[in-house]
Amino acid sequence: MEKVNFEEIERFAYKMRRHALRMSYAAGAHAVHFGAGMSMIDILAVLYGKVLRYDVLQPEWENRDRFILSKGHGVIGYYAALAEAGFIPESELDMFEHGDTYLMGHPIYNPQHGIEFTNGSLGMGLGLGVGTALAGKRRGQTYRTYVIVGDGEMDEGAVWEAIMSAPQFQLNNLCLIVDRNHFQLGGETKEIMEHHNLKEKLISFGWNVFEIDGHNYEEIYEAAVSVGEGEAPTAIIANTMKGKGFSFSENNNGWHHAVLTAKQYEQALQELENAYGH
Amino acid sequence: MDINEKNIKKWSTVGARPTFGLALMDLAEEQENLMVLTADVSTSAGLDRYRKKWPDKYLDVGIAEQNMMAVATGLAKEGFSVVTTTFAPFQTMRCLEQIRVNQGYMQIPLVIVGLASGIYHCYLGNTHCCIEDVSIMRAIPNVSVMVPADGLSVVKIVKSAVDSEKTIYIRLTGGSNLPIIYHEDCEFYLGGSNMIQKGERVAILANGTMVNQALEAAKLLELIKIKPTIIDMYSVKPLDEERLDSLSGYELIVTIEEHSTVGGLGAAVAEYLIQKKNAPQMLMLGIRDFFPHASEYTDALEICGLQPGQIRDVIEEKLKEGKNESY
Image 1 (tube, rainbow over the protein chains, first blue to last red):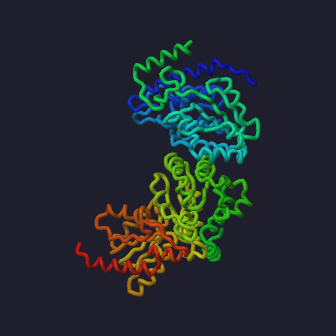
Image 2: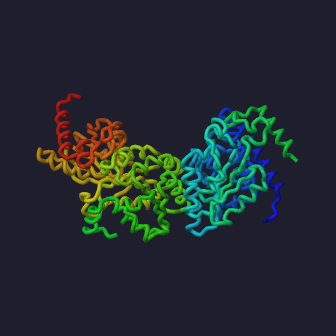
Image 3: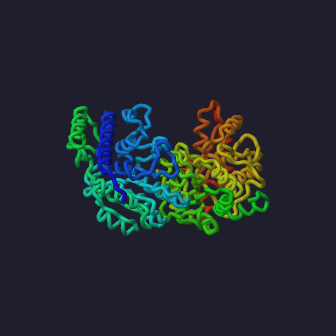
């Protein structure tokens, strides 16, 4: 395996969290889906930092890897990755959810800024990924398609229709990443709709499944680069922590959608500096 | 596919669904990027020959309409020219939100074909009928709606929709042995309509199977010296507003549709005309907000008041009423 500098990924993730905080504060009274954005930042740091092939100068380069954020409410993590990768100017992050912005609270199709699809209504992204991956297969293109789905989102039937279809169409160029932060809007997933034996379920549907620590860069990287090695599509169950990175928000579902005050913003920046700022 | 007398006759004999399959066979020859998706309905859609001849341009997603629309969107975004199809209720309602987000909001174009719409399949029960699709689909921004009346119009509308690079819902109605409305080649385009017969006093606007019902009703009206104008409003969204403007001198505008009167062709016409000063009075014929129960199509039409004699009667009555009204 290629030698990977995981310190670079850590730096990428640190800067992403700064961007995400900036947007969260900019959202003001509109509030922000804080927890679901923060839980997947380390995954996106690995993808945009080391795994995905893309060219910021040619955002629609035909061989780019495609990324789809199915859990569209995790958008601060997504915009943060796009900003750190260079698709979105950092100065524009302050426009989040304000004025005539393209940075709405759920992603809107915007190829120039690297946003592949509109999402927000849960359950729709993996099917889009199946179609995207299938197009590549039928045309003999080599790009890979990565889709992040939330664990709460997996309550949606359409997700399972897509899970059923990817092995049928032999899409070993497709990767499903489940951001398993164990919460959904109304509480813990185990209280609202438990996904018993998720790994076994995905295996039985014909996927090649990894279960990893979704905050461990090395584990994320190894699973993500294995896409295409076998015949089956790849599923990564990434166990994460909702609101990861800040003492007040970790595993606190009150931060599913909340207002970040000036005081909390300062505190969060300080915690970030203490943890990563070196 | 040559447009000639023989083919026109063949298309109407086999009906809308097999003709749709034939049109796609032809399109696949021309269109490198064509991709046809079904939800386990290749036979019902007249696509058995197609899927054998063009396996690389065909995909069956199984009985999973939501996924069909998502996969179709992914393919279309990557440059494929995609046609999706299944029975009209499943094609429009099971996957409605996928269409709203992916085609309406995101504007990734698809040609969406609803099979056996209306009440032709009444013997299967109302699960397999569809009297709401026009209303529902036309409510979505960036989604157009077209309703062909016979075999030739199916061929022409399907081809023009695939070429349009827009999202168009095509509603197929009726069974085999569709009466021929167009005996020779004719233009069909988004926002268009065709004058089938020029008359006076009454203008009947219909689409799908109801164009022929209008023609049959007109024959009966002529016995009482009323010769209506008949217009095929095959494009429900956008509507041919110029055509509607041209009808200002008529006493009565009648809309006829094999669809609910809630939100369909009649409603679309009314929404336009209500804003016009001195617009003609309207009579909206269709299925009046109920699920018709019958095992024969002709009986179902009768229950809905859509047989020619019934149409004649209400038009005659309305004209008499109009003369008595003082406002």
